[in-house]
Length: 194
Ligand SMILES: [Zn+2]
Image (cartoon, rainbow, N blue to C red; front, side, top):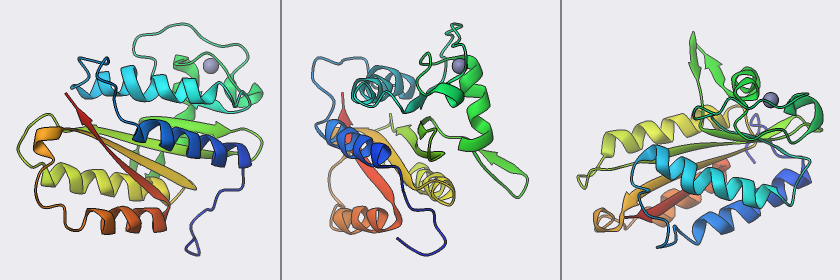
């Protein structure tokens, strides 16, 4: 990995990431409907899969938004490993280590998986492009968010949902961009959603 960027030491996070990427790349099952809004994509697919994959790694903490959940863990995830998923207090506290703060701005991310022993985390950013028009500006912003996360975290995963219909044409350099991302430690996963 490039000098100056953090590289991953935690073997549990490495294995989690490998399993999680494999699971996500299988795609959104047809049985999962109503996933077209960004919130649904996050809740019904990505967070759900993170918890499923994370079940094999109880030492890792999964930090996701509460989405109205008020149930808290005691004591907190940072101290003991796995807490209550979506604990509002853990989510709020996670900003202190998960967010990238630079030039007076705080950049938050959508999901984080942390190894409390090595104090490393994988952070994820999720985007849903609902329009069939090409969202070039949103895509460029998405990549910028991932790079801001990568300045601080050893593995960053960007997950982008698009309708299959929209994902046509202009794909000549897709693999080049994906490989460039991997070289930087940024996984880029595009999912067809309906
Ligand atoms: Zn908590």
